[in-house]
Length: 299
Image 1 (cartoon, rainbow, N blue to C red):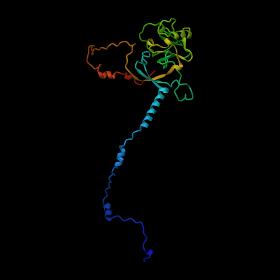
Image 2 (image 1 turned 90 degrees about the vertical axis):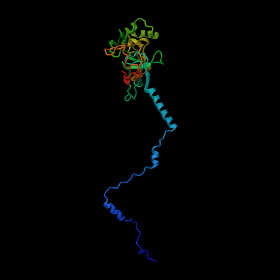
Image 3 (image 1 turned 60 degrees about the horizontal axis):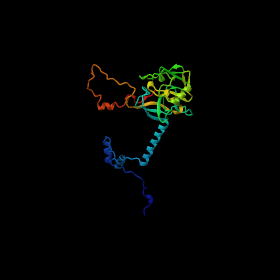
Image 4 (image 1 turned 45 degrees about the vertical axis):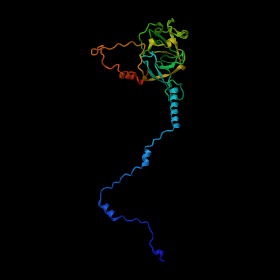
């Protein structure tokens, strides 16, 4: 038997590199390029895989959108369309408005954060029609609670002083002393609400109509073609819905109070000229809306 102590111990060794390889690496100084590893087909298939939401997730997303939209339309914004000429030229027939329903919110601990404020003279407001609360009407606030209002020759006087109204329009109309000399002594206009006529007698002092507490006197900007507080009375504070702040769309619709436009004739365009494309289908398609009124701020 051989002596175990005479055998050399076993160690982890590394085989020396081949001499030929060493010589090749020593003589060749050019860098060695490595080919990129092939793309695994499993990864390529995963990149092309599209995960669609389940029906339950789709329903949840739709419900979330509906809830947010209902909340906004109930408490924040509400769309309206102008159907009449009473607010021309500020608001035209066919204008679509967004109304801010939060601007007149009651004061509270969040007043410092939210833009609440009181109704002011000159504001354009949307409110429930006092005679038929189901309908909505838009007019401009002229008289605040406690103000003394009267009209002389169509000019508004508030607390004895004439009001500067750059927004007011006086289109041609028939003569009406009740409309222009308000409050009139005689009851001549059949469009005046009978209950309002009786109430107005109690609120008139020395030729002025005194606006009661909690109510407002409103007029249309198209003064000769507007049925407003002169004909049906004050607007209660509780009836005010909000203030329109932007025209987001406007259809080109005719106004019944506008005079018919006469064709413009120039030296280069005789009246019987039939050339051009004013009546083409493309021109009619492009002119169905008032594009210049898009996103116009209401003032």
